Length: 226
Image 1: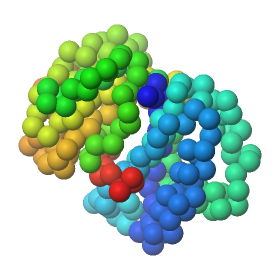
Image 2: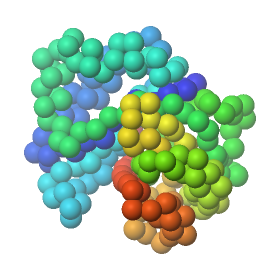
Image 3: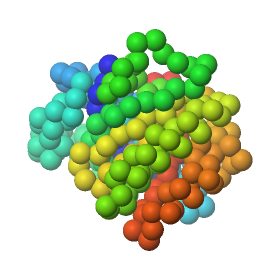
Image 4: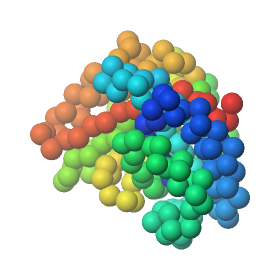
């Protein structure tokens, strides 16, 4: 079980993709999973889009027993001990961002309810074939964001065909403070389609928070474990 997730977002140039994936899957993930408290890893990819031509987009995740696992040692401290192979791999990442997430709760589609689910822990690992990551930041509106997530975003998503689960996280590293990860069995739920996980009505609830609202989304397909 994992109560925390170390989340990585970044892009990789098409010319570097094969070399990067070989390093990340064959060396970096096994090295991370050998550490105490690390429970699982998952890696997701999306092809280049019109607004990022020539770049593949990625979501990497490591599940741990608690946020303490990822803060003792911290990412900054780990950087000082990286091997040259790891440093070379990191240099290939473009537009990187990271977050250490505390898991608040999860909602599951009716036909995907897992026995033994406990708030505060993810039963097993995040491994749906597709994920849609929604980041939400709106200073002074944390309570309303939490309510919208619990009362609208999650129930509306898990009612859709192809939905597996929706996970709500808080980022302990700062902004964006709120993150929701939607697991999907079908790629047809990706943003921009008629079956997008976050519906226009849901976005209207969020947009009502005002001009200081910042939203970001990233949709990807699982590539590891294969």
